[in-house]
Length: 229
Image (tube, rainbow, N blue to C red; front, side):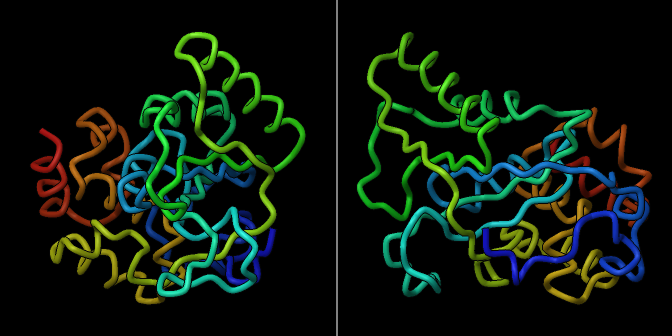
């Protein structure tokens, strides 16, 4: 996978977050990554970002042959979300369960840009993907969802990252006051959560469990609660 535009591994939290919010500062040192396509990447970015055990999300382009895809020149790539997760809290199989539930695997997209797609990173993921696909196929018939090896990933432009958060002035102003660098904000656990809450995803239980570690103050927590209650 091409990761020239990605930050160093999560163990380097001081370098990644020079003014770390508490949840980001406590990021796990070991994470794993899934790459999934579920149509327009704004929605799954938010839904996965509000999932307990997810550490970071980023949206981008994968599954095609063009070496330098952009939103305006996508070539044969598909919009995907990368989900970086803590395997001690959330398993790859659990992520796949969500992936299959969140789309109709029998339906084909009208355009490749919005295909349903799961890209495995290694042989272990491949086995899990193929087993889960076979289970779905045995229950529901032919699966049109693409299942392929990951050959590369290109992060999308900054304005696509945490799209719902960017559209919420109060929440975006709160976190960008701490993380004004687009890459740092994109890789923030707190930003992933805020993006989910801004879209109406997540739960009061998650907010109650983690909210104090966001480090953004009572007014922001009250706003988050209003999004999910």
